[in-house]
Length: 221
Image 1 (tube, rainbow, N blue to C red):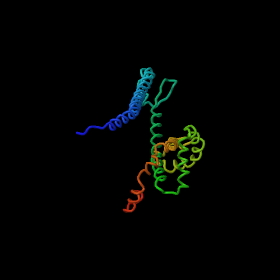
Image 2 (tube, helix red, strand yellow):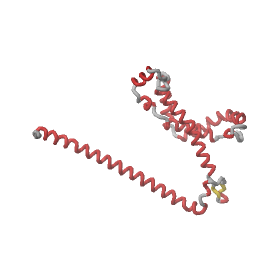
Image 3 (cartoon, helix red, strand yellow):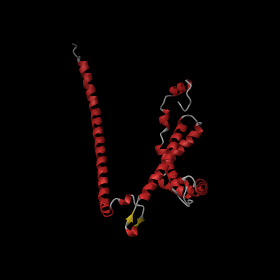
């Protein structure tokens, strides 16, 4: 067996001295992160408890029938929220159907060299700008700009296809509808739920060129 020289002992001692602050920082970071995670869980439990405690008098008086009741008459103390639940689910579904293809398609378009840079850069800037616009501003834009612009086309769609497509039936729309609200929500969330173009650009250029050289199409690559 070989014995360590004094120089090696000095080197190991220096490494340990240098690594001690790093270990302390790592331990402090882990414990701080754990404390924040526990605090977030405690806050979530507290919010749920406060919500249940505040709602218990109403639940004890009216029960859970308000969840599937369609009547809303404060004079008679009848508060049915089924229409609100239905409207929320429908607008969310329309927003996702509108935003997911738009977001993914935009990310693919911006990352796969389908257009020159002078076309890609303004589109990317506009997407980043939409994220920064407050939702109240987008809602007002939809109410005062989008609704009047599509009122007549929607009436034509309702009169033409409403007879055999139940979703497009009903009385002619005179103002905001679930479809319009869903489209506005889709515009609001499409930059948020769309993958970043950098995710598609993470594949090395050499591998993409090799895939094209082997006969794969651009979509397959």
